[in-house]
Picture 1 (spheres, rainbow, N blue to C red):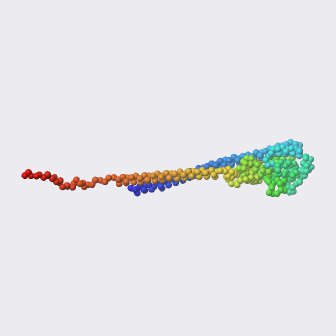
Picture 2 (cartoon, rainbow, N blue to C red):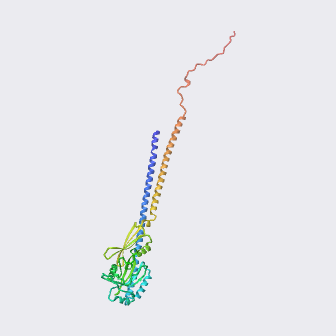
Picture 3 (spheres, one colour):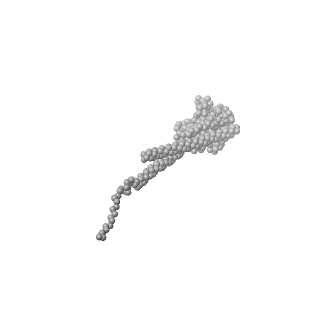
Length: 372
C-alpha cells in the first residue's frame, strides 16, 4: 500500500517540471514573437520616414532648380528686350539675382559666341578689359563677356573661352535648339583650373539663350547645392548622391554628401528638371532612423522572458508544494491510523474461571452436649 502511494507521489515533481518548462518556453516564444513584430513595425515606420524625407529632398532640389531656371530665364528676357546687352544692364540684373539668395550660386555670366570684331564691339557696350582669347584646337568658341561674382568662389574671368568646357558647349547647343533652359553636366569650372585639385569643386551651369546675342549662365556649386537642400529638407538624417543623365545617356555624379555610415535604409528618386533627368539616391543608417529600436525590442523580449521564467518557477513551486503537502497528509493519516490501531483494547479470553469445579463448602454443625 505504501509503495503504491510513493509511486503515485513520485510523478508530481517531474510533471511540475514539465508544465513549468512548457510555460517558460511558451512565454519566451511569445516574447520573441512580440519582439519580432515590434521590430518589423519600427522598420516600417522608419521606411515611411525615409520615403517622406527623400521626397522632401527631391522637392527641395526640384524647387531650387526651378528657381535657378526662373532667375536665368527672366534675366535673359530682360537682356533680349534691349537693343544690345550692356555691362550696366547686366550688372543691374545680376545684382537683382543676387538678392534672391539662391542656394550655392557662384556667379552669373553673359557668354557670346565668337564673331568678327567682337572685342571692340563688346568693349563699346561696357565690357572693359574684354579681349577674346581663343583656346587652340576648338571647333566652337564661347567667350565670357560680362561676369559678376555672387558667392564665395571666383567668377569666370572676362575673355575666357568657355568653349574649352565641353559641358558648356553641349548646354548652349541644347538651349539654342529650343529647349529654352539647359543645365550642364557637373564639371570643374575653368575659373578653378588653377587652384589645387583638392580645393576644386564640381559645378553646373543653368543656361538660357539671349536673342541674337549669346547666353546667360548661372553657375552653381554642386556639393553646396546638394548639402544645403539636404539639410533644409531632412537635417542630418540622410546622406545623398545626386546624379544626372549626360548627353551620352550615362549617369554622371553631380555631388555626394556622406555624413553617416551609409549602411541601412536606401531609396532612389527619379525626376526631371531643367530639361534633364535626375537621380537622387538617399540613405540613412539604422541608428539615425531607429535610435532606440535595438533597446526597445530587446527590452520587450527580456521582460516577457523574465515574466515567463518567474511564472513557470512559481507554478513549479506551487505544484511541488501541493504534491509534498499531499504526501505529508497521507503520511500523517497513516501514522494516526497506526497509533489508533495500537491503542485498541485486547479481546476477552476463551477460558473463564467459572468452568473450574470448586470443592463443596463444608458446613459445620454445632456440637451438642448430652443431657445425660
